[in-house]
Amino acid sequence: MESGGLLLWALPSALLLALLLQLSPRLRFRAKVLSYCALCLMASALTAPACLLWNGGRTVENMRIIKNVVRSFKYLYGLRFDVKGLEHFQVEGPCVIVSNHQSVLDMMGLMEILPDRCVQIGKRELLYFGSVGLIMYLGGVIFINRKSTSNAKSVMSGVGQAMTTDNVKVWIYPEGTRNGNGDLLPFKKGAFHLAIQTQVPVIPVVYSSFTTFYNPEKNLFTSGRIRVEVLPPIHTSGMTATDVTELCDTCYTTMRETFFRLSGTARRVNGSTPHLAQ
Ligand SMILES: CCCCCCCCCCCCCC(=O)SCCNC(=O)CCNC(=O)[C@H](O)C(C)(C)COP(=O)(O)OP(=O)(O)OC[C@H]1O[C@@H](n2cnc3c(N)ncnc32)[C@H](O)[C@@H]1OP(=O)(O)O
Ligand SMILES: CCCCCCCC/C=C\CCCCCCCC(=O)OC[C@@H](O)COP(=O)(O)O
Image: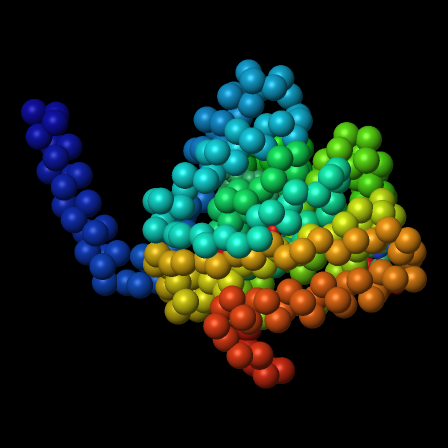
């Protein structure tokens, strides 16, 4: 009797939802993004105990576990990564990895190629994203307060010391925020100060544009292919604070050219309207 009643409600509701998703591209897009967030929350909640049992607490070693979990997400969303230049990660000791940042989907691209003993710099707000914040904390993500330059700078100088004493690589998104407008935002300089202060190489990584398969403005979120290129390390030994701007500009120019080449797009004309990233 009870299961009959449940069927009476559940079946039409499921059919109605399926119909709505078919009819409204916006709803379909939102549902897919929401499913990704739910997957991240669920996977993080299940992975956190494994990290605690295996490694006991906050340590970069947990990134290996997190990486293996996140690498399976791409199959659910029909994403394919074509990666070139992985050999450039084989530098002795620490380095600063810089890459472009287009959307929350970047976590899949990040974990696809993340080298061993590598942590990321993330905005402090991410710490409060429930189990996702917990897993980032356990993986050793370094949180910065973007609203306070002095705080961000002092955290970054602490990172420099830890990089050399603990032999860790640091992954930074120098655009400082997500940007899905089919171009790169101007770079912030924190990553380049860090590399020069610690005299370690900078390794640029470029992901092709997502706009052909993921575009919130067009409610587009389909399967797709992402081309990834790890570029040769840029050595900083002998550089000083006066070289930061030039290093930053060199990386920006090289990465932007690579981005357009990988995306198969021409250079952007200034003034074109960017769309919001999600
Ligand atoms: C299943 C779930 C999976 C989860 C997976 C886990 C993975 C998680 C992945 C998480 C991914 C999360 C991804 C994310 O969350 S991305 C968002 C967070 N990340 C970043 O913002 C990183 C990039 N930002 C920067 O580098 C900024 O520069 C910082 C934040 C440091 C300051 O920015 P701010 O906007 O406040 O200031 P400014 O850049 O205008 O600079 C002002 C001045 O200071 C100088 N200056 C800067 N730095 C230094 C320094 N160190 N020593 C000395 N000087 C320094 C600089 O040259 C400039 O001077 P001048 O040149 O104009 O004279
Ligand atoms: C109990 C609280 C529950 C809160 C639930 C929150 C739901 C969100 C859940 C999952 C989102 C999965 C995202 C995985 C990590 C994403 C990292 C990321 O891409 O962060 C954005 C950051 O780089 C730049 O931020 P802005 O572009 O400046 O903004």
